[in-house]
Image (tube, rainbow, N blue to C red; front, side, top):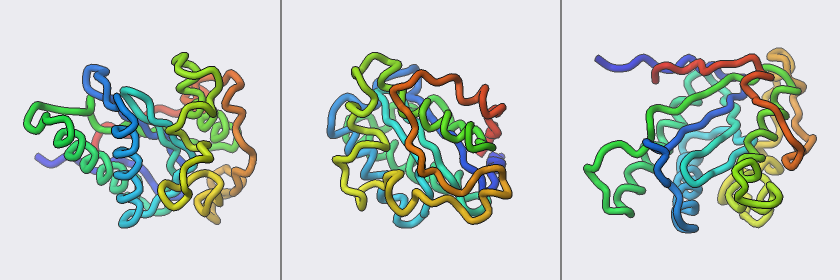
Length: 202
């Protein structure tokens, strides 16, 4: 029996994440990280998505996504994760060796400006919390990496910076011009947003 689609409406931002099965290492080399970014960039060409923040860690990734239309979130994430799994398994000679991710992605709706900035800061602080770097900006595969060409992967300073016109109706100001203080301690974004995963299927 086919699984029902996820309940992820357009016009709202979401904190989206997924982990490797058994917390195994997904990204062990610079080539692994680059392959993931290239896969996401390729998906963007056919399934546009506002990427407000992201961070790729050794065994998982986080994104803050703002879909414009109902169904866009699932279509985009499913597209790039399926492509990533196929390419990762081919590159690591693991075709036919079981699952790569622990399950389907999780997504949490973000409903206010304060919650939005808290979630982005939480995402940006992942390498710092894991003691992988002394400062968050030192981690190369994250949204505030100024070294990445903007046409390779949308950064929060690019055209995806402006939020949808109806964002005020959804409780957000329509602009995220204030840079999150990624090196400042932040609390659990799910607690601040009052959100739990809206996705049990999809």
